[in-house]
Image: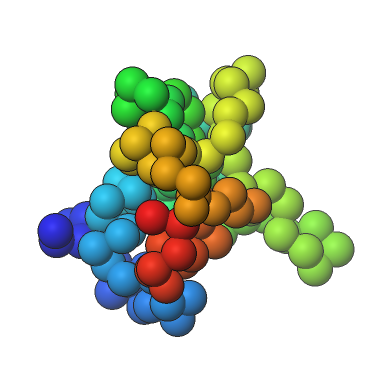
Length: 132
């Protein structure tokens, strides 16, 4: 499986630093989004002067595989008191659901399935051969 064509070399290097292979990034449908696409395709809302470009982590229904929502890790969040504000954003009013990678329903039937507290951690866990 090829990596998503719109991720940059820097994006893939970041995942590689976390020991996440490009194949798993592609399997999880992780992609890069522009600010206009974050608004129109991913349904993020913010004033037009706010740059929403970044890496998008789609969240899928674990049984149907349908995209339910997403989380965007913004490239350039505003800084407040030296700390990023709204570094991660999701669609306003969207469902708060457990992140499930594609194919999660079958994997949840396996008694060796792991549950992690984050999208990147889940992908990294799989890259080490854990959790199916």
